[in-house]
Image (cartoon, rainbow, N blue to C red; front, side):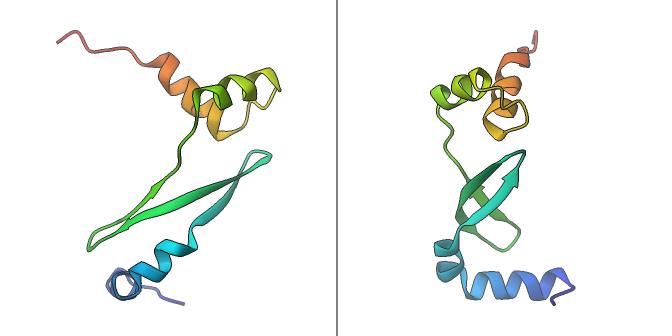
Length: 84
């Protein structure tokens, strides 16, 4: 097991093309969400997932309150632009 960030970074950067093909699947609420590893650099790993607006509405209609689509929907709904 890697226990320091320098070794972790070196391994990630060395094998970034292969790791990017792996992807990432996480359980969020009752759903399994698959993310794409879109970038591996010297400082961080970038993951991406497209969530369609239709998916957000369908999740609410199906009562799936504890899922990623609903969490994103709430961020959008609760956003208030700054007055600057």
